[in-house]
Amino acid sequence: MRKPAIIKLRNLTKVYQEGEREHIVLREVNAEFNEGELIVLLGRSGSGKSTLLNLISGIDVPTTGEVIINSTPLTRISEQARTLFRRRHIGFIFQFFNLIPTLTVEENLLLPLELNVRNNAEEVEKALHLLDEIGLRDRAGSYPDRLSGGEQQRVAIARALTHDPLLILADEPTGNLDLETGHDVLDLLDRLTRQAGKTLIMGTHSREVVGIADRILTIRSGQLMEEEATP
Image (cartoon, rainbow, N blue to C red; front, top):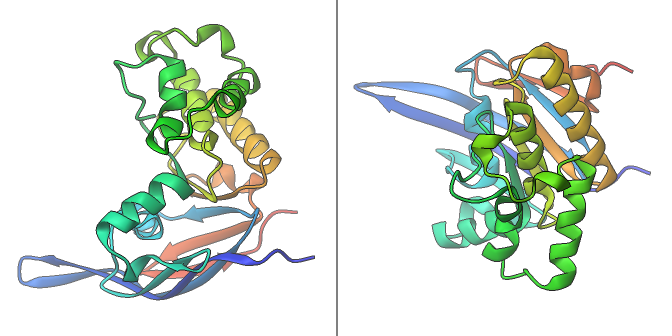
């Protein structure tokens, strides 16, 4: 049975002013993403992948059009309301990990719970179980600079899932890793997000990741085009 669409993009356009000329990054994009889908968003550097992820998360707002997540119209609510929505309902994974260097692995992991005032004993124990899932329970007291790049990204994946978000957004999650480590991180990301039944949208320039996708979308000339996913 087809699961319902939890993300709807309606006539989404983003235009940046560059001096006296306009740069159209996205042009009247329409798309829907369903609960539990793993979406790979392909495009060369500068094609608009990060812009689209920023619009979906409410970090940025479109020039025209709408982003609706789980019936919440992100483009029609205040910046503060978007920030609170993002904090509660979206998990992020970045190319450069974005772990806080002055916090331990455990403290980084638990940060989303603290921000959402959900750091009770039951929630904390669930979060710490994720350290077992990524094989780093014994590194809970370590600081990020003591971890390899692959280990840091595994922590970042776990952190994105800690607060049980509706949606995971990943921007070039393997872009700062070697090929073998990147494959391991992708396998982990695939397994944990599917295990948790989460919707994942991953932006990348690398076609090597398309094998894990339910759907593949490519940004070309500001338009979103769907490709056939590998069976």
